[in-house]
Image (cartoon, rainbow, N blue to C red; front, side, top):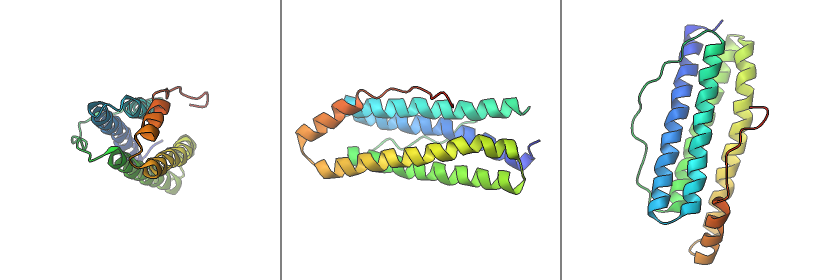
Length: 169
């Protein structure tokens, strides 16, 4: 049984995951506007992944016998100075997601709510991957700086990214 505190926190995280999808859509729109279709694809796939994460919370709440409550949120950042700025913003956002997942885990641990602890384990592992992905791309973008050929090659590489939920999802 979930406490009111844990139920509320899980619901807030579900909504934050939906917000994350919007944030990545805004980054995709910036990239599209700059004619970086591969970078835009990367962020569009990221948005799809965030909606998937939100639905994991939605389904978990439902499976536990609780109602998910959907609410609105502020507009995400829509103005970026560069591709690098968009990716640094994304990494900062992922660090906030990690902080929030850790907080949820702490609540579940304090309340000895084992089903929630098991559920959140997947997200903890996912956040290691998310932060690593953005950190690696930031380092690549910084390394290639204004080399238009290298930017073109990275853009082409990111154009091939797709979202496929894993079997463990």
